[in-house]
Amino acid sequence: MADIQTLAEHKRQEHSISRVGEFIKQIIYGGNDGIVTTFAVVAGFAGAGSDGIAQIGGIAVLLFGLANLFADAAAMGLGEFLSARSERDLYYSIREKEIYEIEHNTTMERIETLEILEEKGISSDDARAMADIMQKYPDYYADFMMTYEIGMSDPEGENPALNGLATFSAFMVFGVIPLLPYFILDPIQSTFHLSVIATFSALTILGLLRYWVIKQNITRCVGETVLVGGVCAAVAYSVGLAFA
Image (cartoon, rainbow, N blue to C red; front, side, top):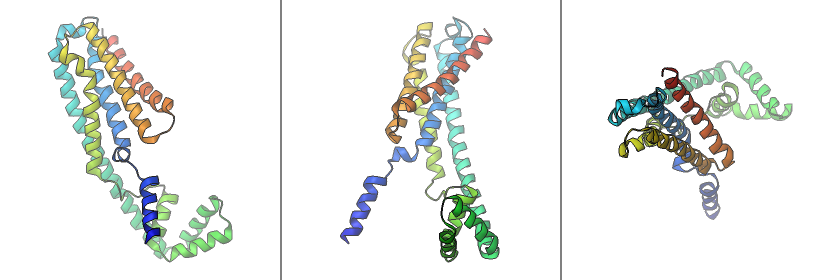
């Protein structure tokens, strides 16, 4: 009993993933898109002319920005939900076909299995022994083939609804940051400059969050996040400038 408890403790300490880590893909995707999409509204007006925002007023900027924020956040969240559901359905549909092949086309599946194992550096004798064992356990055999032949991961631990909620929440939380200066200041050029600073601060925070989860190369985590978001922000400003 002590050994089992030790193993369980080891799993919790060494292999556990934080709740944030479980949804890091959705958080980064939704957060980056939220920041850039909302900043695009502000940058579009600012790029349209030096007095672009002042002419339409801060309230209009907020209305456009918030409408865009809520609409895109809902679209992103629901899109993530539908894509995750579709991916799950596709996985189980292909897995059923794989189980059928294992049961009714044993020879071909065995040949494919031996090729996969030998490509992984396993000797022919060991590969045949492993194939013999897997044939006794069709469910595991199907999972093995789904991973190494089809290249699809088991979505069993995925929750499409939570994935969608994480994307929606990240979009809203990070996406509102570029608008914050317009809640408290007049819509002048310096306010736009503060929005730019807020945007890159939000991208930096998102990059630091990415680093905090994966714990690898803080320069790359932050740099990539800021660079990708910055390029998108520059494109938005340039489009507004082109129509000045």
